[in-house]
Image (cartoon, rainbow, N blue to C red; front, side):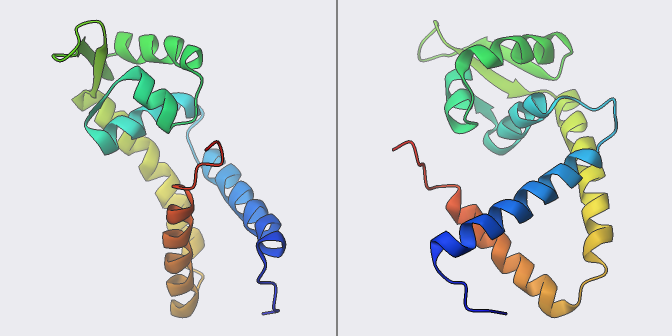
Length: 147
């Protein structure tokens, strides 16, 4: 491995690897799967139990108006449930339904299946390195360049 250690040297390497892997994971999904936007919403609710549309918008880096239709469709399909916020009746609280959890889990299983197969060709040291890299990438997510 060479000595590329400055952020300017590493950034394009990480970007390239992350984008190609993300593309490949998207390709592993069934053609009839939910849209990426809907999966992001279901994933947010799976991680947070309940949330508001404005919180989903902020934390998933979405414009509020880009969530209106997918939220309505997810609700109509019975994948999320909407209720009034007990603290402020003007706001909605969204929750994942059992059907929504099932749809989300099925989508993640398809991606994980491809990834497990790809990882099976790596040795223990490479797997350990990837686990460490995943932890580091997770920490980067907290850095909001909009601040």
